Amino acid sequence: MAQFIPYSVAMVTPFTHEGCLDVASVPAVVRYYLDQNIPGLLVSGSTGEQHCMTIAERKQLYHLVAKAAAGKCQLYAGVAAFKTQDAKELAQAAKEAGFSGIMLGFPPYRRPSQAEAEAYVKQVAESAKELPIFLYNNPPRTGFDLEPETFVRIAETVDNVCGIKEAGNPENVNKIKPALGNTVDTYSFFTGSDSDFIDQFVTKGYTGITSIAGNVYPDQCKSIVDHLLKNQTEQARRIWENIAPGVELLQKAGMIPSIKYILRKKNVPVGYCPPPLLDVSDEVKQALDKIFFA
View 1 (cartoon, rainbow, N blue to C red):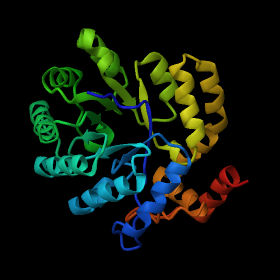
View 2 (view 1 turned 180 degrees about the vertical axis):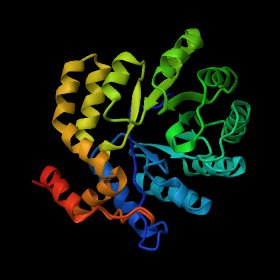
View 3 (view 1 turned 45 degrees about the vertical axis):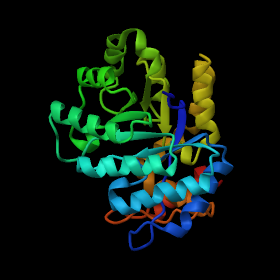
View 4 (view 1 turned 30 degrees about the horizontal axis):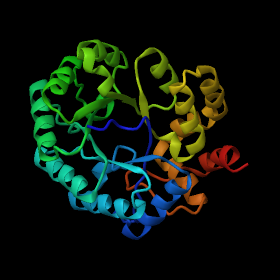
C-alpha cells in the first residue's frame, strides 16, 4: 500500500460569519494551494477546525476539495470523530471522494483506554480498507495518549495503517521503529510541529510533516523537507532561520486566526474561525503586516 508523501499542508477551512462551512469559497481556497505547487493537502484536520463542522459538512468538504483539486495534488482526509460510527462514515466518504489516504485522530475529551482506541482504529480501518491510514496521536488536544506498544500492535494487525503523526512525546517514534523490525521502512512518521521538525527529523526518527506554516510559507517549508530528505541539514536550518520569526509570531498570536488573516489579505476567501475563537487584534495585525507584507 502506498506511503504518505513526506510534505503536505494542513488546509484551513473557510467558514461563513455564522460559523457554517462556506461552500462557495472552497474552490478558490483550493486553487490558492495549487498555485503554490503544494503536493498534498490534509483536509479537515485540527488546522481545518474539523470539530467545528457537522459530519455532513465534512463529507461535503471532501467532495468539494476533490473536485477543485482535480487530481493535481494528494489529498488526505482528517476523519477523527467523537463516535466510531461517525469516523467510519467520514472514512467511507473520503474513499468515495477519491482521497489518497486518511488521517485518523482519536476522539477528543472522551479519553478511551488503549484497548478501546485499538478497537476504534480497527473498525474505521475496516470501513476503508482500500485507503492507507496514518494515526494521529495528539494528547494536548484530545486528552488521550496512544502508547507506542499499542501502535505497534495495530501496525502488525491492520494492513492499511501505514504510519503515525506523533504530536505527543517525540521519543515515541524512536521506541516504535525498532519494534517494527524489517517492516519499519514501510511506515511514515509525521509531525505537525514546524518549529521542531528539523530536530525531530534528525534525532527522533521522523520522516515527514503535515505543515501548518506551509499555509503562508509554502516554498520555504517544502524546501526544508527536501533538504532534510537529502541529508542537507545545514541548508534546511538556514531556511528555517529566515522564517522562524514569522512562525513564532503565528504561534504566539494564534496559528489559525493569524493564517486566515494573512490569507484574506492575499484575497484568499478563507473567512474567519467560528466563535469562540476571535479574529486577531489590530496590534497583532500590525505585527503580522510587518513580517508578511513589508
